[in-house]
Amino acid sequence: MFLTKRLSSKVILQVILTVMVLPYLFPLIAMVQESLSGQGWGNYRAVWAVGVVPEFFRNSAIIAGGVIIIVYCLTMLAAYGFSKLHIRGREIYFWMMIAALTLPEVVLLTPLFSTAIRLGLYNTYFSVILPLAALQIPFAVLLTRNFVNSIPDELFDAAQVDGANAARIFWKIIVPLTRPIAAAIVILTLIGAWNDYLLPLVFLQTPGTETITLLPSFFVSEFSDDQTKVAASAVITAIPEVIAYLCLQRLFERGLTAGALK
Image (cartoon, rainbow, N blue to C red; front, side):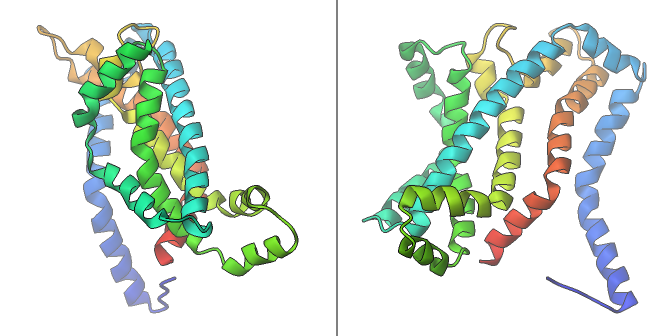
């Protein structure tokens, strides 16, 4: 942890941090100001009056929840195996998985579409949940493996001496001690799943399955482009992510910092 006691150093550090934050803060301020221009809070009432906001929120929550569960379970198991279990060729498997990070979502769109049609998953939640989870698992495993590496091997050796098998070690040691990085994985996965636009646009074609990211499209058409309603839709869309981050902020920061320090 970096500490400074001199007042001048604190002032300089605060100024530097403020300048670094401003480029990220201005777009948020502009978005909120745009959403309140014209009719003011009437823009939000107009967005809500469309009648699909609760349904879109429900669909996004189902998809994000499904993605988070899959990513969390598979990530923790994979990180435990890649970090602490003696598996032949585990480094090869690990880097093969990390290579998946180089594949952009749009490149996989055609094979994913064909697969969804053949399996009968088109226009269902699973057609979005499964690809999103698969795309986010490599990065989540990369972060979690670094965190698990920071757990002393002596702790696992002691558990084995006491007669604990791999499954019990995972449940009693890995799961409790990885809560900080788990919070970071949950936040990052939520952001990725909640904000994804391309997959819901392609695979979900009825209002009963569409997500909240498609809400701004109700105010953009060939003959109209109401940016105040679009900005209001964007603010409404971002609210769950902001709340989730504020609730898990301390664990999120601890998880990323611990993984980085190792």
